Amino acid sequence: MKTYKEQKQELADWIKALPSALPFALYSSAELLKLFDPDCTTRLSAYNVGQELKRQGFKLAADSLPCQIGDKQVRLWMIRELNESQYGRQSEAVQTYNEERMK
Figure 1 (cartoon, helix red, strand yellow):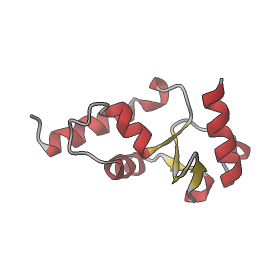
Figure 2 (figure 1 turned 45 degrees about the vertical axis):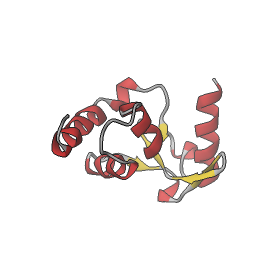
Figure 3 (figure 1 turned 180 degrees about the vertical axis):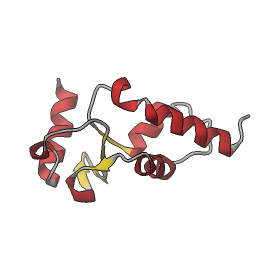
Figure 4 (figure 1 turned 90 degrees about the vertical axis):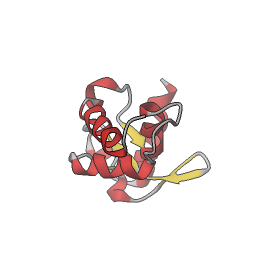
């Protein structure tokens, strides 16, 4: 089993490749963790994902405010750049998130 430090380095490397590897522009930390570790075999959490995204310069949509996605309040990370009209306010970020997934 890999050490926690090795797992965090793998996460950092994986996050560097995200913009070209994922179909959508907006994701929550929990969604990204499920993509990175679908079998929950690491000791990493959604918090670790968020820390690494921030460290690498990714930005939160909706001025970092939580957005209502389904029955959860989540912060949405912009994996790819969007027009400000697609993410600036909570309602815009939620609309973009939902539209991306309905295509």
